[in-house]
Image (cartoon, rainbow, N blue to C red; front, side, top):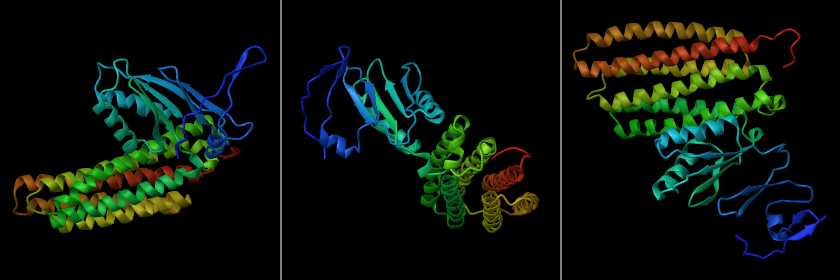
Length: 342
C-alpha cells in the first residue's frame, strides 16, 4: 500500500547537521530499524530517492551513466550491461535531452528481459534509476548453472522436434528462449566478477574457492555459446522445406544431450574420471558427425535443404566440443593445489 504524502520539519542538530524523522509506518513496512543505513540518491529535480540498505550489505555501489544521443540504443544498453557486470547496485541513467516514451519503454523491457534482479525504482523526464535487488547467496552459482542447463536441454529437445515435425512455432519459441540463456550468463558473470574482490562471496555462492572463478567463467561462456548453437539449429529448421536427415540429426542430438548431462554431472561432483569419460564421448561424437554429413550428402534432396542440415549437424558438433572444454576445466578444478586454501 502506498502511503499518503506527509510533511516533516527539518531540524538542525549539533549546529551543522540537518535531520528529518522518518514516517513510522514506512519504516515498519521497509523493515528499517535503529542503526540501519539508508541510501540517498539525488534526483535531477533535487528530490531524494530513499532506499534501505539490506542487512548484511557492506556497501552500495552507485554509478551515473549518461546515455549518448549519437549512439544507437543497443550501444548505450551495452554500457549499462557493463555496469551490471561490474557489480553496481544502483545505476542512474541520464538523458540530457530527455527520454522519449518509446526509449523509456524499451529500456524497461530490456532490463526486465536481460538483467536478472535489476528493477526501475525511480524516474523523471531525464532520469531512470535502476537498483539490483539480487542477493547472491539466495541464487547461487550452482543454482544458476542448473537453471541454465535445464533451459539448454529443453531448447535442444524442442529444436530437434521442431525439425522432425516441421513445427515452425516450436522453432520460433526455441529462438525466443535464447534470451533466458543470456540472462543467466550475465548473472553468473556478475557473480564471478564479484568474487574477485570478495573472497567470502565464493563460499556464499557455493564455489569451492576464489581461484575457481576463471574456470567457471569459461564454463558459463561455453554454456552461453551452446545456447547460441541451439538457437542456430532452430533458425535453420525454419528455413528447411523438408526435414532432411531428421533421423540422423535426432540420433546425434540425443547423444549430444546425454554428453551434456554427463559433463554437468562431472562438474557438479568434481569427478575427474567422469570428466575424462565425457571427453572420450565428445571425441567419438565429433567423429560421428563427419559420417552423418556423408550420409546426408548422398540423399536426393535440394541443395538448399542439405546446406541447412549440414549447418545443424555442425552446431551439434560444436556443442560436443564445448562439452569437451567444460570437462577439461572440471579436471583442472578437481586437482587441489598443494598448500593453497580453497
